[in-house]
Image (cartoon, rainbow, N blue to C red; front, side):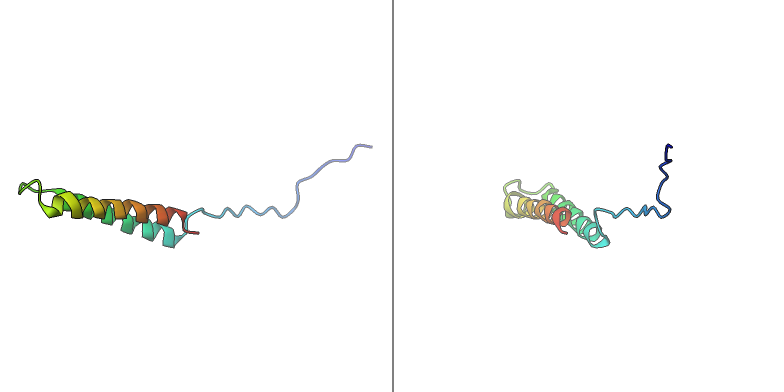
Length: 74
């Protein structure tokens, strides 16, 4: 005789999210750091100012690096 294959009675449909609440918080912080870096770049003052040529790009790069950390954090 042919046996019928039935689905198990208890199927667990628990799907774990890849990111936790902490990852999202860190990602939002990194976005805020990048935005702060771009705000530091704004303005009509001297284009060769320390703030625009060195500080702001470093802040933006730090924000992107922190974003990568936030994504890879387990």
